[in-house]
Length: 112
Length: 116
Image 1 (cartoon, rainbow over the protein chains, first blue to last red):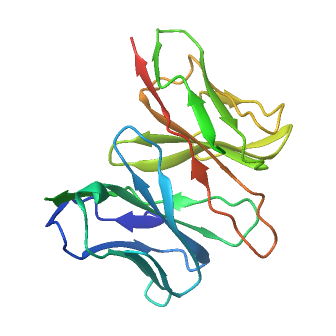
Image 2: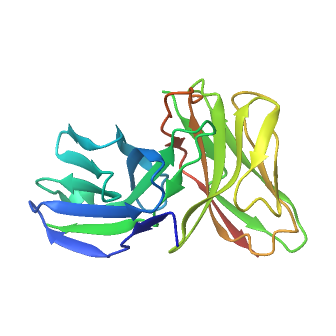
């Protein structure tokens, strides 16, 4: 079983839609959760960084962590064509060493 | 602007040849990482370094080597022993994690390596 599971999509939505991206994980020691956005032929760009359970909001983006279900989500409100990219989730435990485990990424296209 | 610079953007390797990918950061980060990204497989950790002159193997270190002589630089050599080197290689850095806090990683824009 992989440490982190992420539906690869592709996901296609009309402009203005609310997008929900999700990851599940198996290691209950994970406490730090990140979402990255990766455009084609570019490196991942950090979008959201959260610790433990709960919600975090930044503009049109909301990250949600449910540790009891080992499930994390990223919501994008009022999606724009510029949001078209691959979204990667990543997580790690609090152990020193900072090794992160990444999902395979979900490809999102927002259609104008 | 602070950031991570990877070079070259594209690299071609001949059979039996070693090639070196450059990674430089000016974020004053202690920790640096190398990942390999293949379609459908996500990012896999090759090597990481928490401090100058020290580094550890990741999950797929075979056929690769690194050095960490300066805080700003963490070059990756893909040796001829790596039989399937075609991939997108990403370098990342982070502040050193403390005992009660982990730190997010920030990435460069990658080097795409192909076999001739």
